Image 1: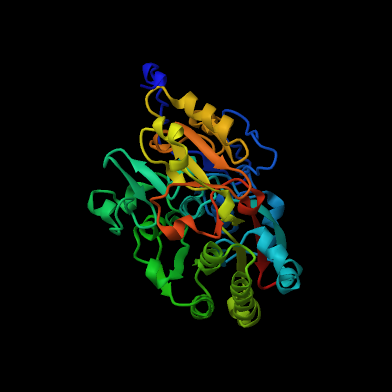
Image 2: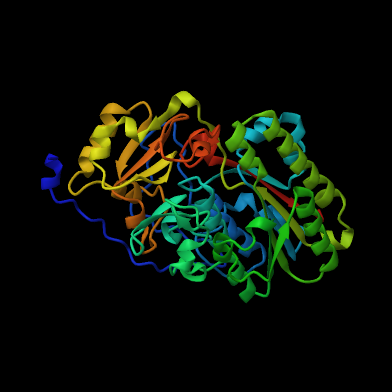
Length: 448
């Protein structure tokens, strides 16, 4: 019998979910951090929620439209205010290229050199933590940090259903039944406690269009993000996506609108082949060529008037070699300390300890896997601002478990019952490495 079972485990108290700090017209809002963010690992790059993260982009979009916004403040002034030098903004195109980390842009060299050369504003942003698509896109569609919207990873524990849920399919982790959690009672329209960007823009008279692959348009995740969207457009290829953007700007040049386009293929190819693979770079070159041709060169003068193009990513990826894959089953002593299978994902894992065993879990990881993982009590990670500032979503403390584990270098922590594809991914994201956390920011005033 484990000795730690005799020690009662403290239960972290959730903070009520109520997003309520307004984005002032003078853009001087300060974040309500209770404790300054500090790094536990020099090689990690923590998110900068105070004005240099992707979670600050929605307030920036609202600021360009001179619309009020509830959420985190906008990006640092120098990253967007030069876009106002040519007059009022009528159209914003926000292009999100999934997995396009700053490392990919640097690897592309001259093939991506036109981006900084032609951009009105250029810079570097951080992703959010965890640096994973469901958390990052939820921040990009709400303007709040993961701790505030509560979507904290690919797999999350749902106490009301007594199951682990897969957040791309909204199904229980043990069976691939798409939208099964929706059928069980999870409402996509109310799941995120923060208001949607499109809802807030609509109140200011701005129409929002969402463009993504047609297979994603009706997903539960899209329904969460698309609250307030005037129209969701399903596209087939990157070329189709760029055509739809140009078509919308050309046919509706006088209305204020915001087009948010998402393309996933760069990320998908990195999962298969790893970052920097020729197939990944070929897809990146193709998408960037389409951006330049269709949006920078082919638009009419009327469609350009008052138009801004913003190009960024949700996160990057890091190579995860076979020799750096760690299986939980190879550590039976650690398994014995856990109440159930891990949540989160292989680059950032949430562990639920047996009663009174949280300290033992942290101690085991620090003693036996120091080269691979950094482990911290979940409350410490929350207090240090990894997931963002207060106020937290009601379920945040429960969803990060008892111990947060984020992986060093290219290590991944998974289980042998994960699908073989998941085990063998060449590239991953979700952690705090610079490769995962650093993303580019290019902003163009199209009528300049």
